[in-house]
Length: 286
Length: 288
Image (tube, rainbow over the protein chains, first blue to last red):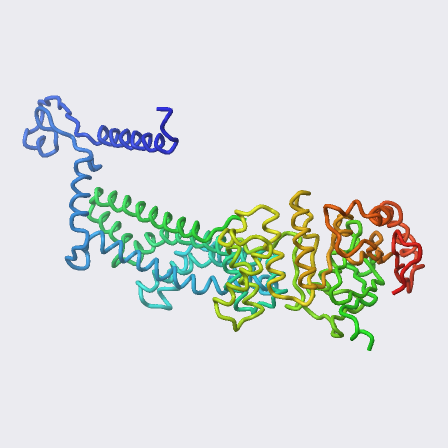
């Protein structure tokens, strides 16, 4: 056992923890056999209707059993892209809608936050001028913008994208500004003595120097965006994983709700891993 | 004008960081001829780095003028290459890319092949041709500093400014790079202005050593002409008959005399002070 690395041992433990959790789930949701005392009064028909029939009845938990979960997983994942009309689409399609919204909102936020972050990172005056607004706008819950977005944009789908935009823009903006403002002075002096043109300086020196900090901001933004999209789609409806989840709740299909939750977690994890990889690619040893 | 005859001329330079407080240095006057190697020595806080930054164009002096080839120095220029105290290499670029970045800045019209060839020539000069694809983080301190030197030489500046380039290196590495620098400078007839704390380094490398008194109110107290022969070597330096008079003079200044001028300077007794020319070990001072 000691020969195994910490990583392998950790993985083994993870599997054990998972199995234990599944076991507990199974025990808690397992159908219980309840014996009913024979009651002499009243009609037996009435008692049967009320679930108080003579003899033993099986009391089912409302929470899905593991077998039920397995069925749902199998059903959903074997046809992820089916489309039976507006309220019945496969999980793949719903996730694709959510990812497209997050992607679009995120790209828009990048297009605004990175150049603007450059500006306020380079110019202390711009930083002082814009900082109060950023500080006030940053803590606003993105969903609070929803009514204004719906009123002005008048399109629920684009409003969703706007909400993603507004929640992703702040971490990226602040991190870009911080990264740009903290490029080592020595490196900037080198570019000065070499009379490097402003554009070359921005792209070949400041951008790579600030890239790890910018990527950190992007990773935080992506995390927030993925949190927010579920809530936004529950609100605006139509398509997307958030809407799927809410729809299944209305169907009282808890197994599908749990399935959706797990999918949200998995996709969020994959997104984070992707950004961690990107972050590693642009970071440098000093 | 007389400024057109000298390569570099500094006139009455002074710098104070806060209005009202005494200047770090004042009344700095010196000239550097083409091809000369000049070292400046002084205790910390006398403003050596500030003078170098003013010459580089990275910092503005409070008062006074600097001319290079008859033109006033305003802002940084590719005419003056700088080797920084910390190596100041771009950590995300390889050694070759770092040098090529500088070469591309100086010769924007060159082809990629030309730039690479030129960069490699200077990397070979500092003995780093095998490390061209390494990142600075993979290099030792001495190697990093050599890349900095190669980068500064590669833009073929009219003048080289070195800010204590070997300060962070161990004695052995320092010696090796000093030899290399000496060799390169004598080959290229490069004009150099260098800050150092190391008396032996100054004796080995420079033609002329400027001694600064302590700051604030620092001045150039003496300009010492190196009396050792031109073809001096690090290995045989200490056997030269001129070595000890020279070394003793410099150390004496740093230990005993560097404080004297500060007292007079802060009392305002030094207006119009001109540094003394000294040739240690020679009976009659050489007049220039």
